[in-house]
Structures are given as structure tokens and as C-alpha cells.
Image (cartoon, rainbow, N blue to C red; front, top):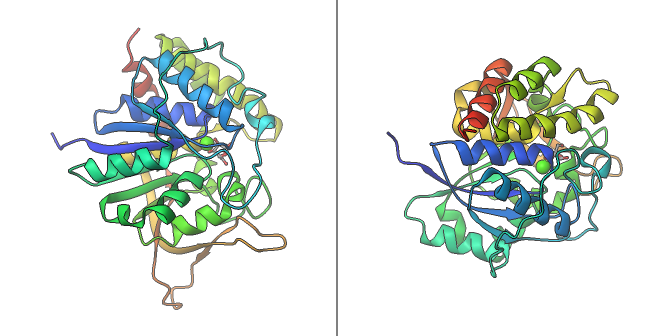
Length: 311
Ligand code: BDR
Ligand code: CA
């Protein structure tokens, strides 16, 4: 069997972040060295508390570190309308006494990356603030970062504004640093995550397979479902799980290499991820963009990852 890929998960949990954590921590292909948290879906205090509760509930013990409480140059925008007041409304999850590392997120990332014999992959499912700070403060880490797999952006429009997706819009300057870093990046924009829709009958099948993590995942999706179906979606988009799934089963995705830049100063377009799709432009691709997904196989992968936790 191939050696496990060392991974740091940077997230803002968040219902779909919780699902991405469940998947990544279940996979025998990934060695999750740490979870780092940023403000995003809710304030940092709440997303960190949610990370503690999720990790305790699913019984995994990666290192956990506190990251940025606001974007690099802006005030924080949060998403209570999607994730509730706690950032993880819906399932009843006990408070947890989970240890938080004394080192700030970027310093823990730097240490793990420096000490790892193999290149470390960064799985980012929130605003890219921690990664932007890491690459600015410690540019030398780039030689030991294997890839960034991120959920964010949209080539054909956004979800938070007509131009921008939430994670990129919250901290476009950090996103611009990441996208122009020269590091290998795989991006799951809303173009693919809106195809990664889980339907009601599939949520019920997940619940019915039993096991505390499967039931927990179904309850997370129940809450996420309400917001999205009220918006006219036929189900709940599995945004962040796509970025985790690409690491576990890249064959589920159709990918195109493109040159993608982040708009930071647009009057109407701040946070837009602009892809140059002109074959004649000569623009050098900097991002592998996931554009399609084998939806049913993704749902089966999620169910298998949940089942791996047992009863
Ligand atoms: C992204 O925004 C957040 O609300 C989700 O957790 C996901 O990371 C989708 O736009
Ligand atoms: Ca997220």
C-alpha cells in the first residue's frame, strides 16, 4: 500500500467542514497531522469550539490549533444563515474538553511541514486566511508543501454574491496570495460542488445505515438541507467534502488545468475567481479545477467513510 499522505486540515466548521473532517479522518490514504481553525462560517471562538466538539464526538485526536480570528486586511463576514448561531446548529453535540496547541495555527503548520519527511498537503475548507499568513510569514515552507486542495471560488459565478463564493469573498487578499503562490492547487469551486448534491433519500439511507457518525452526518446534512432547499436547490451541496474526496478518490472528478486569478478590488466582483479559458491566451495554468464529479460515487464514499467509524 502507498504511504499515507501527510495532511493538515484548515477549516471553519461548519456543517460541511465537519463532513470533510469525518471523511479525511476516516481515510486510510491520509495521515491527518493537525486541524487548524479560522473564523469564517462563524467567529473563531465558535468554529474552534465546533472543531473540539466534532473531533471529540468522532473519537479522533489530531493536533488542534487556533488560527486567525479575522481576514488579513478586512473585517470578518460570517454565515449564520447557513450554519446557525453556533456555526453547527442541528445535531446535539456535547461540549468537549479537547486540548488546543499553545502554538498559533501558522506556527504549528510551519513546524509540521518542516519536520515532515514527505511533502505535506494542505486541505483548506474555509477562508484562506491562515494559508495566506503562512505563505507570507514563512515562504520557505513552499518547498515542503505538496499540494493545496481547497473548496472555494466559482468560475461561472458565486454563491455569496453573483461573482464570489463565500470562502474567497471573506478573505480575497489571502486567496490571492494562495492562488499566486506557485504551489500545486486543486480547487473545488461551486461549479462542481453544486453538482455534488446529496438528496433527501440518500440522507435517509445514510441515517439508516446506523452507527453514531453516520447518524451525526445525516443530522448535519438535515440542517444544511433546510437552507439550501429554501434557496431552490434540490438537495444539499457537499461543498467541503469535495475537497477532501479529491484527496481520497481523485478519479471521481473531472479536472481542467486553468489560469485562475482572484479579484480583490472589484466594485461588483471582489472575491471572484477569474479563469482564463481562452486557449490562445498563453496564460500558464496555476490551478487544477474540478469541474464535474461522479455524484453517486461521492455519496457512496461519504457513506463508507462514516461507516468506518463503526457503531
Ligand atoms: C463554503 O462556505 C461555507 O459556508 C461552507 O462551509 C463552504 O466551505 C461554500 O461556499
Ligand atoms: Ca467551510
